[in-house]
Amino acid sequence: PHETLLTVDATTGQNGLRQAKLFSEAVPVDGIVLTKLDGTAKGGIALAIAGDLGIPVKLIGIGEALEDLRPFDADDYARALLT
Image 1 (cartoon, rainbow, N blue to C red):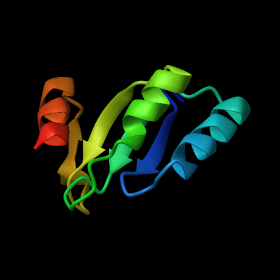
Image 2 (image 1 turned 30 degrees about the vertical axis):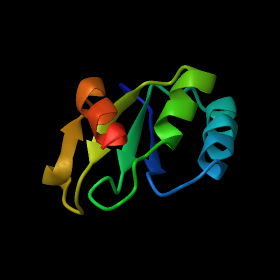
Image 3 (image 1 turned 60 degrees about the vertical axis):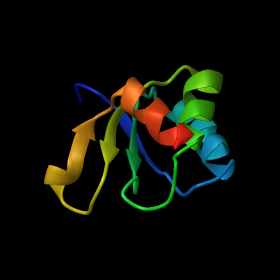
Image 4 (image 1 turned 120 degrees about the horizontal axis):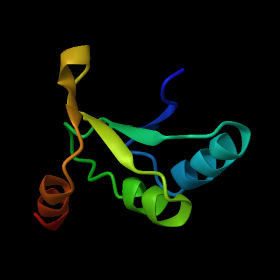
């Protein structure tokens, strides 16, 4: 594969960090796809994964279709966390 991405549900709490650690120990991970950001979830787990494991968020999912995947924008994400 060209890139290995780990998909993480934005509603996942700290368990998501443990899952990401275990997965990245088994397989080199190039980035995170953070899904379910279309609801009330803020996706704070992305900060924990990026900070603790150094794995960047590459894409976000704001719906259920493939067309609902968007490139991750750190500025937009920070604004959403503060609102």
